[in-house]
Image 1: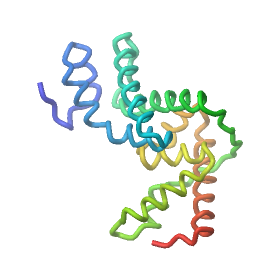
Image 2: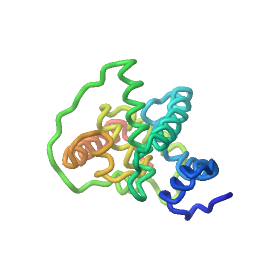
Image 3: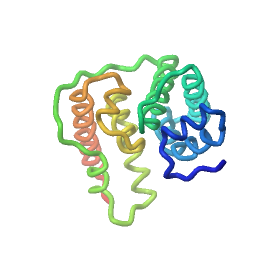
Image 4: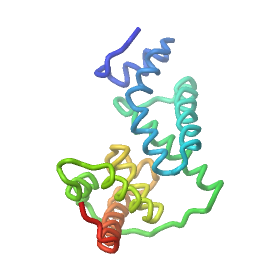
Length: 191
């Protein structure tokens, strides 16, 4: 059976658990771009990103088959949490990440920040410059910006995925955006 994009995630999960593989194929099709982009943005390695992307859905399927319940309407944050964990495992195998200490703040949006920087007609070159500057940020700041902007996740979901407080996630975003502004001034970035 083919499903429409407006079929609720929890229905697709239930259809899959009842033996319909097309339901999982629909979930993958719905979220593959956002999940893969977030993984790639964190790892910056196409082959590792593809490997981890596949591992995410294998783990999702294994967890669902083992009876792990996905909260209603929360398939994407659930899959992103698994993706984030697998990326962290991969990164730990390569290097030991530095840990930043942050404080509390609550008024941020990377989408508004990036949108304000880009002209109405976004160019590939502008996106590439911004992406390169995001890559220059400390790991935690880069991670929060990527999960929010490229993954489309809210700060509560980011806090859950990164296992930190909501205030910590917000403050990390604030520091990241401030550092991004400084980099843009240093690089004399204009759009």
